[in-house]
Image (spheres, rainbow, N blue to C red):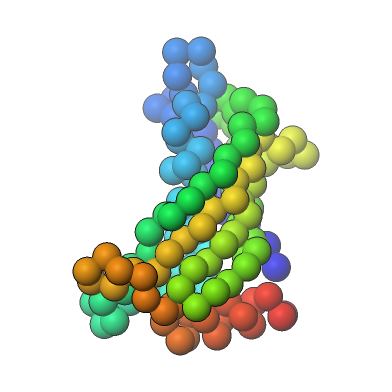
Length: 134
């Protein structure tokens, strides 16, 4: 199952050449991951307050394929690739219509209040496993 989130490119997202500044793709996919988790019923603020657990990006492999420009309508697509007890690995893609603009493979680690790896919350692991199977 792939999660999809629509966004629009604003002037502030672009560089002097009029294309989306490369670092902004990382912001776009961060929003896509947050909305994906929210749609799975995960409240990251409550997770931090109640369980002392947060997520941190451990690794990103990114390919910039084509430029996006001011006022483009984009879709950020997020899909679970692999799940371990303390990590989520996902593929994320940014599209403009049928054009694939950006690909990333992102590894997210679950951390405790001291910044050490810890198991994913049980409810989240259950929901992620269900999303893969359903």
